Image (cartoon, rainbow, N blue to C red):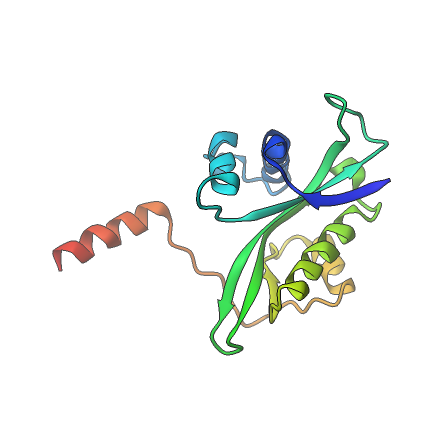
Length: 170
């Protein structure tokens, strides 16, 4: 039996293990510089920056008398100036490879979509790697539109530090 629920602080280590699994899948293990301790602070500290839902399966191997967490979705609020409405950005959704094609990913996506709807969000957005055709097909099967005209822009922590330093001297 599949259960989708909000993450709790006791889930942080399992979530971080899934993040490491996602990094392996995306061939980006060298980019993981965080820790489960930082994740705990950022999800459950005085100022939470994101929210997580987890997927548990009854028939997955149990650890510490709990159901096994086999997937997660991490998201946070955004705001659309054109819609003048809040939105949700789904940073990552990941399901362990051995539990894919069993409805777990779809259940996670539907749960995040319902959260967005219940909160009056005007949109739910996320990114997908251009080489990940199975994910693209999955998202399109859910009714998502892959936007061809938009590129993701990013400033790293190093760039932000440079800009902050530069702005103090200008």
